[in-house]
Length: 306
Image 1: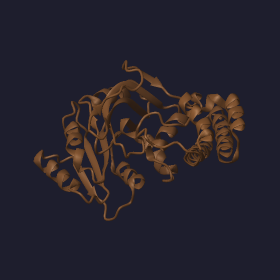
Image 2: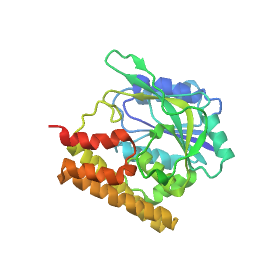
Image 3: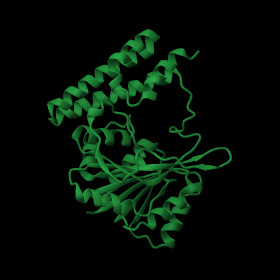
Image 4: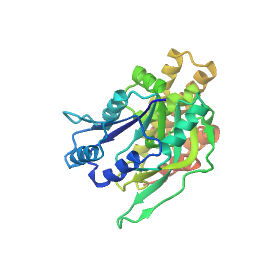
């Protein structure tokens, strides 16, 4: 099984070396590391070149874009350049457990039906004083469990940097993808509707979250943002429904996606133009379609916020 790492960089010099070191010192080395830089203006490229030369990393390939293409297209480009049977997605500023590749590849060998395996992670949460808080994520017993559409949610439950993906899924991404959505979102959901998405309940990465990042918890809650979020989920559900029909997936999957698209469209419309009473009535009927209880409550809070 040939192993690739797809990594993208953009002005990541501050934490880059820690990530590179965690890749180079893996107990099972990748056969290739593809790094695509999207026109960094700091010394990211210099650091990459020096690191590759210092350790004679002949199987590490650095590609520099001639113009900035944005993170969505940049990561897709990195994925397209890989040649491995399994591709590990990699951010520029995280830290990998030294056995991450070895442990996850072992699971692919044990269960050939897996097309996307997402591990648990720990959060490196940087505040004003640069104090690091590491918080556990979910159960951490080393089990590998399927994650199916029965959960009635297309919310991505792990960051893309925890993903290891089979080549077949990347080919499917290239066949149908539209770059309105993040690659991790599409890969996660394509695997889910195919019944090939699995969670590895073991923390194998330190995921660095900055105060300014989109994943940070300090994003203010408001109605307009929630409408955009739910509309995006609706558009993804419609996209997945189209793929499911073209790939002749099980009629049960198609029916579930039809229901999901209908529910998301109705939820979006209520959030946009409806009332608090309407969203409460909606939730009583469709509570199972909310990914978390917190997500359900936040729909109510946007109506109460002045």
